[in-house]
Image 1 (cartoon, rainbow, N blue to C red):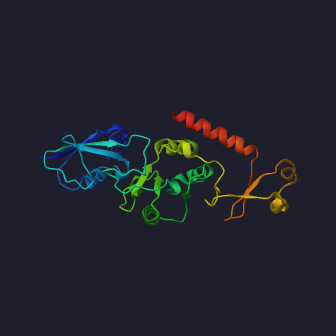
Image 2 (image 1 turned 90 degrees about the vertical axis):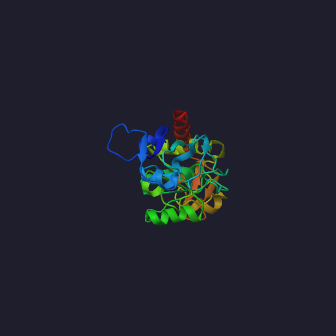
Length: 247
């Protein structure tokens, strides 16, 4: 007699196996906590929204009985990480992120929209997972194995391949549209920008920029100076298009 797991929604697409169209049911001949059983099939715990058996919700620590069937459901966006749940009992007090190298461009786009996002191309998987757990950050990656690490409390497996689509995916999944604050954070080093007088940075500006713009911000971290040029309009257009396409 086996334990049966039924994976719903796009969780079936994450299952281990060589089949082009993965079978959503998995029969397992061992007993262990549900988290271990789910992840042994290829699905990271971060992607699971609920686990149901016998009309009851189960935790990741639940050990099923022989012959039991468990339905494994994905999250239903928007996901609010500030609200504790049976599977994720430790709420986060903010939506801050850490990303790995395979979604590196996403880091700068999240910063452009005002979200605190850490990224270092030199960090290995263990360090990224440690930062996610210690700093209570949401880990964003396309690497399923990285999301399975015990240190990772909250995370999301990025489905999209293109950076602007990835940004829209994150905003939609975590319900962050109303929290966007464009151009308030340095896209290079993640530090919040501060207003600065034109006279304090005028020697660093090109002649045309001196003539056309009066309002400037500066990054206290790297010293980069920013202003509302034509690139701001292009970024707004790209963001609006990405968000519309996701709906």
